[in-house]
Length: 241
View (cartoon, rainbow, N blue to C red):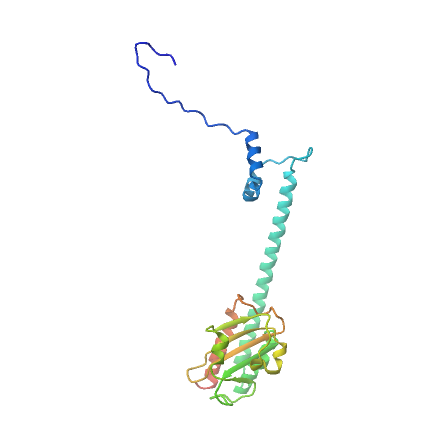
């Protein structure tokens, strides 16, 4: 630095430009971090791939991006297909629940009402068996004297339900106390508490299927629970409770 001899040297700070990143630096970094593109796939969108492979050791990014687009398209189509199938299934189930409710409301007497629960509903909902199970300390149930209802000892329902109002089970063996002779047919089931009134014993509604995966933990139960609430209210009407 030039300065006058009669003046003192002043302190100066020199700001150096940032080091430039060369192609060799990038290649070296990628060699040291071979999973960079896997961790940062969006970086592929910033690159201009070569039109074709020229020589050994060069990656054809255009082919990679085309394959990636194909994979994304396939995944999108699969997700769309699943959404449509689920929507159709939900609509179909809703129609079945509506039909079951209408059948319950059309019962002309109590015996007909019980028959709809224990026979007709299984056909409407496309399950193999439907059963109403009621606790009792005797051979008969207070307020209810009707064939088609399974009677179990007191305290059994709490032991089965484990504090839940809805229990979904798959890949099981049917319980004879619930399904009687049809127990060998049942491979999955849904059990729903039926709360009729304070004057009636605990009860559950059981639906069993020979398909081991028709009922399984995590399935939505809003519609079948709605049907159960309708059955509870119909019981109160028929029993004048």
